[in-house]
Length: 499
Image 1 (cartoon, rainbow, N blue to C red):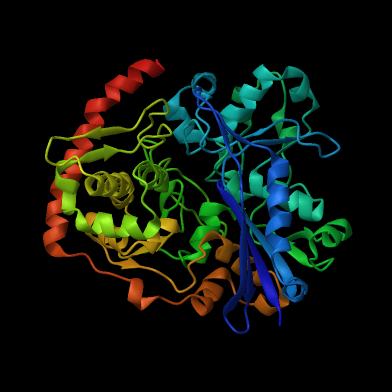
Image 2: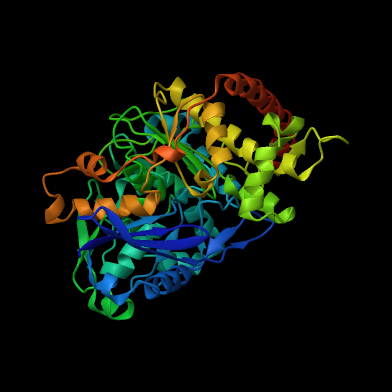
């Protein structure tokens, strides 16, 4: 037996899978949970050594024989996190994550220094938003001057795991496009944006080589092999951000498909053969990890919303499904604006969640649960609409993430977005995409690009796929308009606090 490993470093956990590519079978899947530090100022941080501990814990649960079957590794990771390294490879500070909204002021400063939002879109392709890596670097330079001066290398979370496994410092274009300082059209660093972040230092000196295409970046080190049980010297592919690996893991590597991920955050993205720049900056202009582009909308509250409400109402997973299915479409008029962690789209980093429409008749647990689910879906419907406006039609939605396990949620996505929803037998998303990318750099995969590999190794789970229901589509069009009106109504409350 020979396997490729897919590692996915998420926010709440780290997951590893071992894929027997000859038998088309995942032979092991293990995970380890991760802590998260948050405060009222919007900080969201993790220690990098927590990731390594979780990696060791997850691999420690795998049968030694399966560990020894590995012939290549691919790594996926949460995007945007800022990992500053010293010359010796020491991590200099807690890692500020994608969901960190404490750098609103730094975003404004960088945008102004660069020449305004329009110039950001024109020259780089993206706005400077809270959560992106750019503002975290400026924040670090102000808050920890001495440590900042020691910074030799800037990495992203998945890059750091690659560094640990191989000793190699590099970035990959897909993940790097979420930093805010990559010119996504030309796939090269923007010197102007780097100067806007810190005019007194050439940050290009801290940026590692940029990988443009999937390839081997290095090999498992002897000391890592000894600690983990992995075979020494097996290749590690370039990997990528969790969205880029999720695209590979759902077969979204050709135009005409849209992936929707119902995870801690919610994402909607589509493959394009050319750069796609949203003039409003709401759709992120990211690169893909297979040579194209991956325009994407991200919301910061997806299963966050349902999990918080499920915990509040003390509903386990089985009870949650029964309750949301018993509530009528539209949750009897209850509307949840799920901005528990602030929000990226719309750009309201200081926003709070709101529940509207409650009265003496509809204030019931099942309506609160369904409204949280519907609110998270409406937020992602906006991304589907914006992608359509940019010429990227959703002929089908490839659904992934923890929320895709809910039959009610799958049908709501189909109805709200008016598109067929497909779920794959290989439901591991980003970790499976990383395993497939690892396969592509092996001799076994030579001569096959990721399109061929995805086509050969992905199959639909027909029992979980669903079509939109016309009567529900019409109902949800009206409900979605009510949701959008509610968002517009509360926006001044939080934009005034930002300014």
